[in-house]
Image (cartoon, rainbow, N blue to C red; front, top):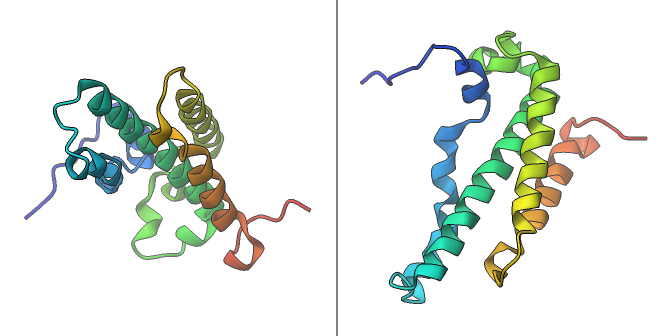
Length: 143
């Protein structure tokens, strides 16, 4: 079975976000079921916002990962087709995308309201950036 593929304007930018990976962020919706809060409108909206924030933040990490790994991805038989490695997305544009996505995710985390479920996006971002940029993983050294 062949996947549908959009190749129109903006397609490389959309692909670099790895939106197909967003399904992993559904984990933030689990408390609605386990806490039996599906009928609580505020709880549902809070969890949907958390899902959106994690999608934005995870995309920022994916873009940064592709930037860091672009050189090695170009040599990989499958990864060489990723937008940054293939050159269909410019590295400078991708860097701006990663920064804007990270800032948007963190700004959304700071929206007013009582949402303890939204306390983990900054931690998620810091953890992933630490894993991505550690020298033993091939990340760039900041020293």
